[in-house]
Amino acid sequence: MTIRKILAAVVFFAFLFVQRAFVWAAPKNVVVIVADDLGRQLGCYGDTVARTPHIDALAADGTRFAWAFCTTASCSPSRSVILTGLHNHANGQYGLQHATHNFGSQPFVKPLPMLLKQAFYRTCSIGKVHVQPEEMYRFERYANDKIAGGRNTVRMAENAEQFIREDDPRPFFLYFCPTDPHRAQTGFANEAEYPGVKPVKFDPGKVAVPHYLPDQPEVRRELAEYYESIARVDQGVGRLVAALKAAGHFDDTLIVFLSDNGPPFPGAKTNLYDAGTHLPLIIRAPDQKSRGVVSQALVNWTDLVPTILEFSGAKPPAYALQGRSLLPILETAEPREWDEIYQSHSFHEVTMYYPMRSIRTRKFHYILNIAHELPYPFASDLFDSPTWQGVVARKDTQYGSRTVEAYVHRPRHELYDLQADPQETVNLADRPDYAKILSELQQKVRAWQKATGDPWLIKYEHE
Image 1 (tube, helix red, strand yellow):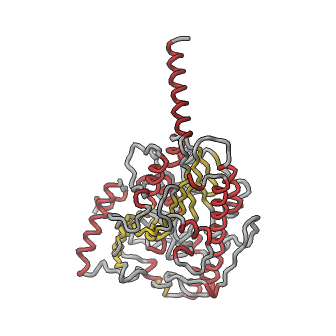
Image 2 (cartoon, rainbow, N blue to C red):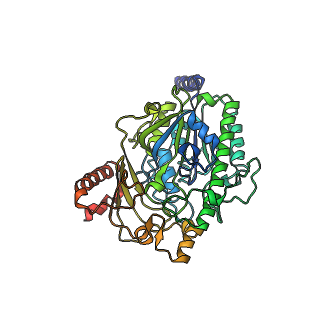
Image 3 (cartoon, one colour):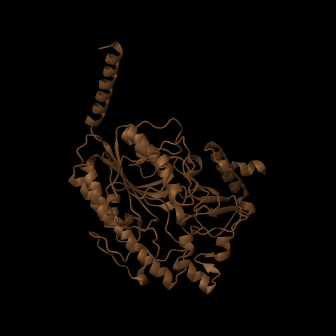
């Protein structure tokens, strides 16, 4: 045997030893559950209409974040942030991934499935991914058999159990993403049958109509359908948790539950107002000593990848991530220095160009509408919804807590006092007594754009 072959053999067996040492250690499995277009319509967030006992139980056994926010209220861009730890303007997924929209992340990006695979994790996606390039975001396995387009959440959990129980010593990363409660071609796909899922019906007369929607019969009907779709998500979560327990992995798995963006109604989804971005986040860590914690930290989806990398011990990418790990504050209700978050929206559909940047503190929300000269664009499914078509048919001038004019035609600067005006309807940006606060927040947004490499900084340069 030549010296070269001997050295190659030594390197090979050393690699196997390191790999085996890693997988023989106590497993640190990761499950990330991403609902689609779910706001805070959950029992654990105080919604008395929702029927979500399994998600509520998960919150009671972990940490529920009271002030969690997506960075953009659009599906593909938000999911790119969830999987990269970079704002969408930094990773390149500016808008939707599919069909003619065709946005995708830049070649330098190292998403979570890639990073965990390099750390000897086996990875599985069930349900919606909706980011690209596919080879960049590739999972080792896709378990999408008979899941009814991501709406049979019980079948999704059954597929997950097969993956969890595979005879493989490596820790696992499961990315579990129902399509519910996203709109379907018509309604919320409640008319179909989903084996194993029990339909949960809601009375339109008893649903809660949020401030940003008009209290009209068609709105109530849509909300009742929306709540039914949410109940399917809950049943899937319950079945998945049961599968983890049955397989003996509930107490060695980090479970993260969240949504990509807010409800699929005009006034919420695609907006940077709280209605579109203030979302559920529940994290259950296996070694967590305090349970049922309600965190007051302001956090956003850039914080998720750093959290998972710290838990797993996986090596971070060479570039700097744009969030912070949440593990150190899981058991602290009021951690210090978690008092502001930043948000970035550029597109939804390819024709929906309306870049916005914002900073949200505990008291103020400042939104910069970069293309404020344009009318605010509607996502096609929201424009075609019975909710908005009712407004069009009646020629309403008021839409929930806003006028139609204020919703469609927005000023360059929006500033809201969230304590005095939680519905964000009184714009203070032109008030002289708020000029100092406005200037401070504008400077912070500008500095953050520079720090995160925002291409839309060119707007300032031209001005």
